[in-house]
Amino acid sequence: MSHAVLEHGLPRPASAEEIASARCPAPSMQEIVAGDTVPPPPVLAHEEPAYLGSEPVKVDRYFDQSIFEAEIEKIWKKSWQWVCREDHIPEPGDNYTYEVAHLSYLVVRQEDGSVKGFVNSCLHRATKFKRSEGIGMGDQIRCPYHGWSWNNDGSLKAVPCSWDFGHICPSKMALPEVRVGHWGGFIFINPSPEGPSLEDFLSPLPEHFAHWDIANRYVSVHVAKELPCNWKTAQEAFLESYHVMETHPQLMKGVGDANVQYDIHSDHITRFYAASGVNSPHLANPLSEQELLATMILGDQNSRDDSLTVKEGETARNVMARHLRKVMGEAYQCDLSHLSDSEVIDTIEYHIFPNMVLFPGLSLPMAYRFRPIGSDPNRTLFEILFLRPNPSEGRIPEPPEPYRVAEKESYSSAPGFDAAMGYVYDQDTDNLRAQQEGFRASATGVQQLGNYQEVRIRHFQQVIDKYLNA
Ligand code: FES
Image (cartoon, rainbow, N blue to C red; front, side, top):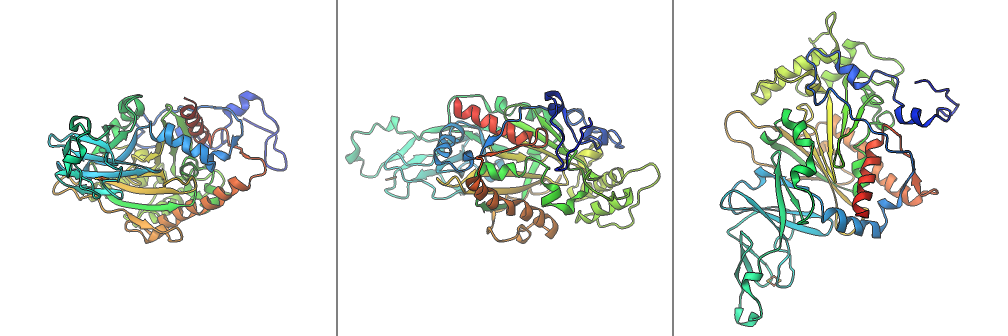
């Protein structure tokens, strides 16, 4: 497509068809992977683009208290959401407390290995059984205030001074349950008894992840940081690559940013698919294939091998994928020969409504979660987990306690983060306070979104509106 370009860099007014189909003129993601030695699986070798309109999006949705309260009632009380990994509660009696906004839930492993979920609030005078999020264990659920207790299956066990509660029918005092679902080694809850099953809610994610054994992973890193912004502000920073050239200029040598592929798979599932080992289309002086390889090697702690060279007929992507298959296969004690070049080196990022981001690739094996904290629309808890393949032999490591990073502290101080990776997350989250404050300062009360590069943000907001209007 060619547009005449005005002085400010914007094209002349285009037709509706041109607006809907406009793309960066650099090679597309599908054109890039077509040149790989080992081609991607069918699930990556296709696109599901969507044009969802160009209307401005109001900014009060990021700070308005009444909208925030509506989100709690219509999204957080009605959506499937990830609570913990199966490994957090492996044995009967193990429990995990999960908090989102001012809501609090408890999942408990049962004697038969199943999991039940309860509201974390006593039926006597509402005290929380567990005062804060995290792992626990025990043969009962006991309130710390007056000592009422429940069996782990939620049935009432004992009421101290029961002579004073003759009006209570024990069979009607079971703890209120929430729905529990399992997928990919994650335990999910849905506080609502109505709505789709977890399988339907996640579709087509399980089909896509048939290639990636996400259940067979362990948590090697768990970092949490409180961010001074709305829960949507925070995760939208990770839904587009448009910000790379301004926020992460160091990444332009080796990452295709303007030519990232954005897919809309369903209401709850979208995808971002970005090439590594290529020049950013914005780069004024593109690197050679050997130089691109050097940037990838320097970016990988496990791959500082200066002897790697790009031979005639090869690309930096081919060489790096071959090298990482070997290095990571040895590190994880598994055969990675079945993985395509793209699965080894590229960024494949799925967003799962309302607050989960999952990367199936092995070089960046992360999961993100974004949750509102308490009753304040301007506070978010952002977590980063690294999910590495379970060792083929020996004990599977237990999940670590989340490491809390203070707002002004660099992620690079967290265990498992090197300086370069920590710096990228610092750059990402440094924008958020300014954006949250800018929403309130806005003169127009709206934001403009790119039709393609920011389509996942528009889609996310449109799905939120569906929930709020339901
Ligand atoms: Fe729980 Fe009284 S509030 S036992």
